[in-house]
Image (tube, rainbow, N blue to C red; front, side, top):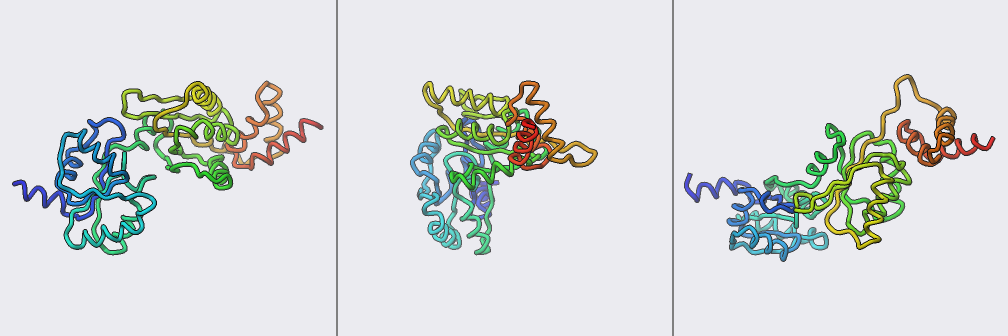
Length: 296
């Protein structure tokens, strides 16, 4: 296949979303480098970071780089769709990983679908699946929850859902919020709920912290206090344990178990939250019932 035929095959679809390395440049695919080299427009989350990537990969391109971020994606998508209709080769990249996964790209895909314009993806490195397989937690069934909401009410809704979610859950978090997020999870979901926190995936100082929510939260809080946290963080949270077979247990029955575990030295609040998650009952209701029972 000659060069022109290869390019035509590479660009059989005019809009391509391509995954970029999440840390290690060696993870760049041959398809990504060829797409960069032959694109006519590259829509970037940050044009400066994309230029740095192109330089680091040791390739060149004649493509025009334009920004595509959360503030201009709606309007810029219409422009890109119009250009693609006229035959322009449009490559879409984010700063790291796959566009559209907690990064710009979703609105562009939606616009292309609505315009009946073909769009495809060139897969590559993924922080979600990399953290998941390194977590040591079950991988057969998992959900991706993106970044936890900033609003307290919305974040509480997420945590309430995670109390009974039996699938492994993957989340992203920023370095200046990750310790607080893990601490809040520990309070709501119980300090013993298993978690793995991945930092600097595929990079030289890659690190995976594994343990109970309480333990990992304390570790990150101490690090933050002693000099701050750096890098990108991925949280992989174990699912809640399924309720045992043999029928549901009442809140009153579970309250008795909470009191027994508290008498054995466990924090009553932690025991209530863990049992609530396991049996699908409201943790506040169970804690209140256990408190009342303990003071009888």
